[in-house]
Image (cartoon, rainbow, N blue to C red):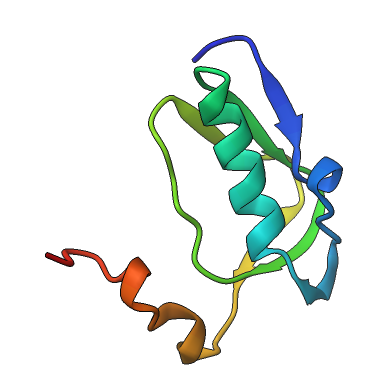
Length: 87
């Protein structure tokens, strides 16, 4: 991976276990991808999110004591644009 990294907090993510960080995490991934790749750091904390869209050359790195908690809100995962295998 290229030597470039960002922290999801720089994109507005909050480790309170209540804030939905989907947009912040995906924006961080997109920013790293647009730079040609690198590392997206998820620091210590409880990070609530919906669907994460991974991209090539992006290392999604969770630091010690970081927990990514995926929302149980099924509606977040039903978007037509996010369906895996959509034709």
